[in-house]
Length: 117
Image (cartoon, rainbow, N blue to C red):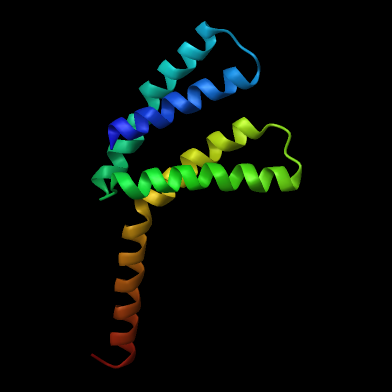
């Protein structure tokens, strides 16, 4: 999971510099900064029970959906929107199964209390 988030960080570090027509030094420093910061988030999500495939799917889907929604809404900086979608989608995809389990547990508890058990 940390490796996947390191990849997400590298992508999110490189894209803003490339979108502005930056140099290879700027792109490399952005990638290194992303690789330093985001694996911590990946480890935390893995400790919460997150899995790699839903995180990868959520990240890719989030990036695509944010870019599409941004193009419809007239956002002019699509690469930064894709970065946002990648990170938020990855977090949502990594924690989605746990949210479903928690919601189902709470629903069963409320139903059981309502029946007087």
